[in-house]
Image (cartoon, rainbow, N blue to C red):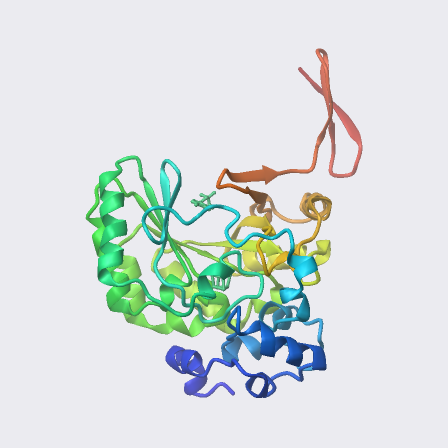
Length: 357
Ligand SMILES: *Cc1c(COP(=O)(O)O)cnc(C)c1O
Ligand code: SF4
């Protein structure tokens, strides 16, 4: 399968699998998945690159790759999705595509297009609008706003997947942003390292990313199975150009909500030199509710990591507060007593250890 075509990003995009018959070239669908596909795709699009689907075990309905891309009936089940909102974080503001929640950082959505439509996407409302790329005028409106606000130090370009833009449009955005003195950091949120790493074998793209440094990439590996020779090579190419790569995983029921699975993911990320930055609790978004697990489960996983992996491999477990109130970090409680004369902490072995005031 490792033909020239397979290594061609445009081929991967052109040949995205969307229909049952196409998906079945790689995996055998269950009757309930087939039925769900028909109704779900009318509301939330379905698409997956041949590369990404090839990572799934063809026979296993519980495969973690498959569950991220093949819809199930629960996705449209009104009872299950009842308490989910389309935009719980009130991202939609005055300027289309721009969310300015923290004074120093702004989020810029530049396309609704992704190589793969993840069933657990927190911005499902965006990709369900169809595939649209912001035009130059719309981009200008966002850039003008950023220009007018000196407190903005960082721009997070997201989507949709911003690296699915062609090089010209991407360079236009980066060049305009770099002309703004107060913008120090540019961050790109992309899942292409996971879903179509072929994109990073384009030297022109890497030239652009290097030219407008400092640029950081935050990607989204959720499972060790996603770490392949190709994705590792793609990461290496970015690092050699001075572009750091961080990871933002999402805790997903039945996919990675288990201590050993997360431990293995974080270990393998470190091995390919990707820093695990966040582990997000799954957001209460309509169409995603069936992927949510409990906060207790998340804390149990975080507790399990401590002492079993390098501190560099421990992400911040966090959730996003509804209403656009921002992110909150969550930590297991290590301080079991705190009075005037001493603190008592729980060690990694579970002993209670006194610590002087
Ligand atoms: C998550 C988020 C950010 C970035 O937060 P970090 O903690 O820096 O990753 C910025 N703006 C919005 C609207 C966000 O949702
Ligand atoms: S790649 Fe990211 S933005 Fe696109 S569907 Fe997946 S989670 Fe959502």
